[in-house]
Length: 429
Image (tube, rainbow, N blue to C red; front, side, top):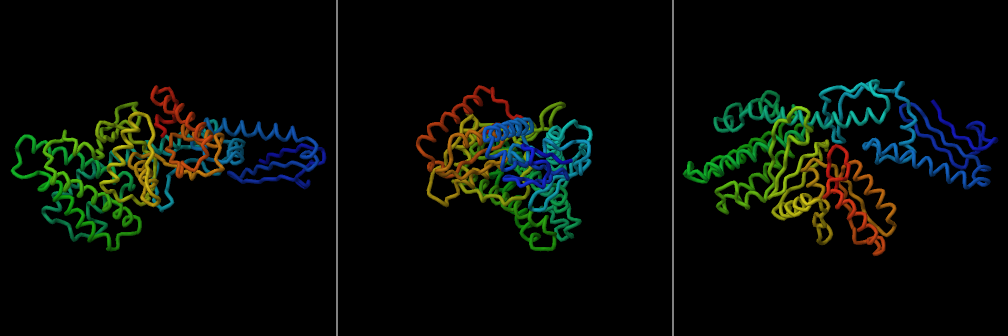
């Protein structure tokens, strides 16, 4: 299939001398846009109208399918013109990250069952969410079956091969995102169970010291010994990220013990990020199965696949930043981290998005940004449901800031009134 736009009698084939010619192959269907010199100079109005009409078509197509909103207009037009009857691929098998991790879909998605490409892509996106939620539920159940605290206490199978050890086999069986969430859900449950024992007076010493903290330290020692062995590149990368998360859990447990926290209703415990999982009910959204609480704010997990990117090392200052931003998100507002350059403001926002399962887009603002460009970015973020992090926001012109503030206010009011229609029930930020 070849789409040819010719706007002059002299431009009867691709052998003409176009002043603008573009060719992008998508699914083996090239798109050619050809304009002759005579048309460009004699009919500038027609050229402007055709260009504007194509942009309107591309924008409406991207609005109807959120995964395509970040594509360029020409690429989205080529996908729009691509027929569904003769694709290169017949169904989707898995999704992968740039780090090399691959996650098979729980259910394949044949492309011929859908009338258009955008419908198929929307189904692929929804199936990604369902697959991650199912992996999380399976990882939590498998972690309970492994019973790592018992293995570490009895020192059983600690010298087993990496391929046969139950915990390392668990690490190799699930994507990193599900592994970290399963550990965070298990840690939250263990801490609150221990604090409930302290509140009833059933423990002689602080239960976090003899239970959760002791298990976390032993698990860290176990992983530190195994991460330097021949476990494979993917498993080693997952173990490194798990160690980073366990270090933060160990530090939080030590802080709670030093401060004498004895109940799970104490704000000194509630100020940290807590993960609560419940199996999703029938016909319920997967996002409702995992709730993330911080103080009195409760947010749903986005289940956006984020790959195996390196995690930010969390410090007490990072926890305070997360606490402030989650309170703002709970009130349908945004945040404005302030500080010197290189202190981790942008990385903290990206780390919070990762913790909540949200895709975060970072934009570096400068003097060339106008309110039209900002408006398109805001529209795309609302449509996709992603987070927007605008770095160097203070570099915008004062007049532009005034117009942009009105755009932001419109989004915030719509979110507060719950009238903004967002894709897959995601709250934009």
